Image (cartoon, rainbow, N blue to C red; front, top):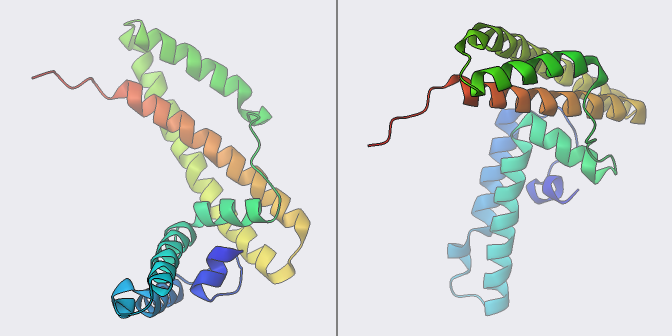
Amino acid sequence: MKYYEALGIAPALALDAVELKKRFLEQSREHHPDRFARASAADQQNALDMTALVNDAYRTLKDPVSRADYFLESSGIPPSKAAPPELLEEVFELNMALEELRSGDDSARPQLTAARDRFQGMLQDAGDELQALFTKYDASRDGAVLKQIRGVLDRRRYISNLVRDVEKELVPAEPLS
C-alpha cells in the first residue's frame, strides 16, 4: 500500500489525524524539490514524483472514507454498483417525488426535505459504524470485517448520492444576470 509507505506509517484504517499530519509534513520536507535544486535531473524528478505521491497519500488518508476505499481496493475488495436492497422502496418514492418537483409540483418539496434529513441521519450513522469497524479491523485483521466495511461504504456512497440529488433539486435555480 504505497500511500502508507510514502508517509512511513503502518497500514491501518483508524489513524490518528495529528500523527498523520506530522508524518505528512516530515515527508514533505524530506522530498521537497527545493532541497534538490542542485541535484541531478534524475534526483530532481524523483523529488517531484515523491512530493506528488506524498501529497496524494495525505489527501487520501486524511479522509476516513477515501482512506477506507483506498485500503479496501488495495486489498482486492472493489466497490459494488448495486443499490442497497433495504433502500429500494424508499429510493423509488424519492425518485417519484423528485420527478414531481422537476415537473413543477412544489407540493413534493416537504417530502423531499424530510427524505434529505433522514438520509443525512443515515450518513451520520454510517460514519459512526465505519469508525467502530475500523477499530475492530485494526485490532483483529479479520477479512470478514473488511467485507462489512465495504458494505457500509457502498451504502454510504449510495445515500450520499441521494442527498446530493435531493439538495440539487431543493435549491432554487440562481437567476441569470
